[in-house]
Image 1: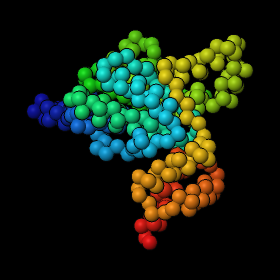
Image 2: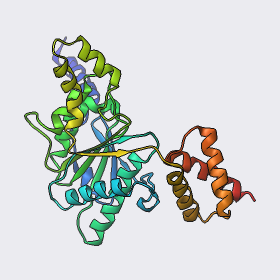
Image 3: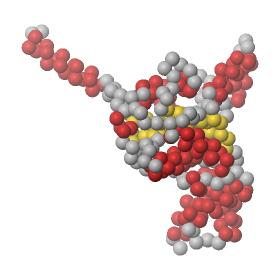
Length: 289
């Protein structure tokens, strides 16, 4: 093929390859301190800004004062440039684990801005993108902004190797975790894996103790463990009353409590999530009257 016709073909091939290649890592988006939250998109190595964080105010998270203070203190330390732990929030579903993470971020960033200090960034990494963690950390090393890396509803199954990627950045690995990053995770499981998997692998192993240690060592690498347990009736009703007061719902206390308990019985559980769903339905109903 003559060179005058070969060159355009090679040029088109090169341009096609450039379009297929992932974009270069760019941490400059974190310089915009008006943005508090981002979603990591591992497929194309980008951070998607989340302008409005879907969060419940810290004052409305009732019955978890001790847990909230522990996470809030850790988050404050980190925002101020002090040593802070990776945190694992585990326990009953619907009890506000992810809500607490977001509420603490918002509260601490309000304090930071009030003192003209840089706010934290919250970056959520989807469970299915954990294998891209090394690329995300490479990006975060380019930035001076302090970042909470958030893994929501984290759990692993028996053939799942992604937990090793997370384990290496929590404590260990050659590169380690950047100094401007901490990891917050939530899970319904204390050890992130089903108990039957841990027990089965222990039974099949030559050394059962080593099999168990391998599976629970991931959760051990979180320096701060915060447990959120199922709601008692009084706890559940305190959440309901706080939401109703915040929304200024026109309903007397006795009727509110009666209907809230009836709703919980129909759902078969009491939790912050169930309380929020009840308030959503009640707000809509009362707005039509």
